[in-house]
Amino acid sequence: MNITPCCFNRFSGLLLIISALLAWPNQGFAISVAISDNVIVLDSRERSGEIALLSMTPSPVEFEITPMDLAEGVMDGRDYLRWSPARALVPANRSRPLRMVFRPPVDLPPNEYVVRLAVKSRQVDYQPRFERPSPDGEEPSSEGLSVGIAIQPVLPVTVYIRHQVDSPTLSIGDFEPADDDPRSHGHFTARKPPEAISFIGTVALFGADSGEMLTSGRLRIGQTVNETRIRVPRRDTEAGLGEPVCLHLWPTFPARGEAEQRVCSE
Image (cartoon, rainbow, N blue to C red; front, side, top):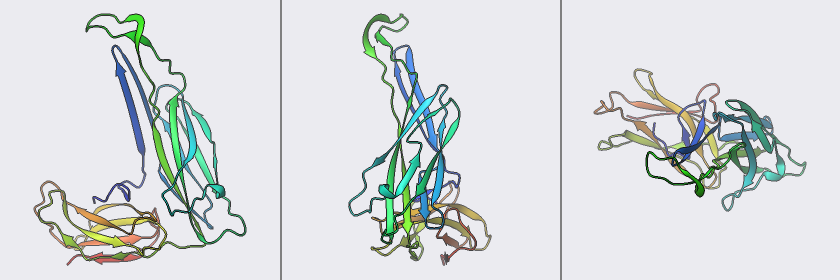
């Protein structure tokens, strides 16, 4: 399946990784960090959640978590969310949990509230080296006319807080074939009402006759988006679909129980 990046993550055990490398003559600096997921959904039943902050760098890495601005019209939930730690030192090749708790006031109106967090990281013992660039094969001068600067990767995390509201029901359009697309056999279109809250669920595509799972993952449609395409992937050796394809949809991620909706191509 090939869904737009904002809406779909192919693997259920999502791992987001940034590796930044800045190389200077005879010198390099690299930092490799990750978060175990970039989406959290909290509600009245599950008021807490967590993700892992991971360092794959051979020295300690400091993570700092700060709130980010939201798109216009999205309800800001940072007053109702507590996260800890706000700053964490993670040893080399280790991880540490980032925990979040939803704490609504008694008079909070029903709605979906959103918090965007920026997870910034830096190598704590990095020391920049000053040196004069030199021709290949020569030692750099110590007079210092260049400097290596540590890059600070920033990974975004979105927390959806649903207070006394339920996930919207999507409408799934008919399958639309794409005979000339080398990467896709076609797509289904998923739509939600314009006034609805976001949808975060699970989608899977199966062969209608064989029952073979073609792909599965998270389907995310934010508050400010009303529809997205769910593409049926085409393998390099496939000229066309050998059987109809069925889309299965769950309103949760990971999926729980039976699919809420099933739509098949003809």
